[in-house]
Length: 419
Image 1 (cartoon, one colour):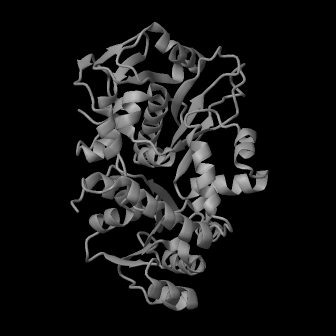
Image 2 (tube, helix red, strand yellow; image 1 turned 90 degrees about the vertical axis):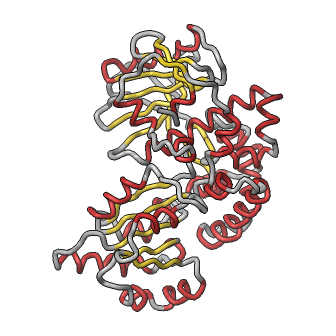
Image 3 (tube, rainbow, N blue to C red; image 1 turned 45 degrees about the vertical axis):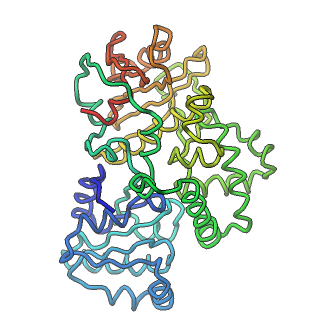
């Protein structure tokens, strides 16, 4: 399988060099191992994986002996590190000893298919010693080999009037996915998704999350799939699935932890603004093809026959593209949704904010033409945020990039992957 450049590559390389340990997390099959092996020369890396039964058993039996047996003059990569939690304290001891010797950088590159926040032994042992990065499936730019980070471009470049060719949205959503699906055109996507999801249920849900009835995760995901882009009403979801509060929170947290889903927090600045904001989160799926798999609908058929559902799928696609781009940029970016309680329905789909308060807002419209009312939400967002508001855009399926007022633009979806 051909290697495709990943937007996260440069950030990962810089991070590994400057931290004692780096944890690269991300969904299964999103390309973590391929990226790691591509970045590091064979002379500088020692690779092992806890997905191999013999290696995993050896590490569990004697973590001290296993870590002591790793080469001292290389960056040690341990793949799927969450499968042997006991190595965490041993890695901490190694790092502390190397720091005392004055050689405490570029020691470990750990990868895993679970968010470190739900790996308490690893997180607690390596606090202050580890940097955390997240890799997602292919972005639209990556699969098109354009090496564009559209958030970086949007933040730093001045927009100018431009015409794009009409995008093939269905093709782009299909390709902005897991590498194996994107690169193997003969792959049956549904069969691949069946295998992928069963692996998560059989291995991660039981072994990692200690979930007794992993088959119920499917029930929750189907319920969530009908609420993409909507404010999450937890009571309604629990009523529909029959889960009590404890089970619901455990299962939902698991889906987020293994990158099947992610949540967008509400934006609010209660200490600075005389406004109240909706407190509910919004739910999205990391991979839009997985979303289509759950609802058992073909995306081409949806595009032709169900514009309302296609609008939600398009919004999910943009949400995932935002997360892919934001994760690859230096520094910290906060992604939220803007929804004032008394905003007369003027909700903005996504707000991306830096530590210094600078903000970009994004609305998503599955339309090839726009009018004034399509920009009302952004105008309220702009006026509320004030001088920290940098740009507001409506991403749509039309062809013209044009201004629609002060700091507000209509932007064709092609902007995400074309120069």
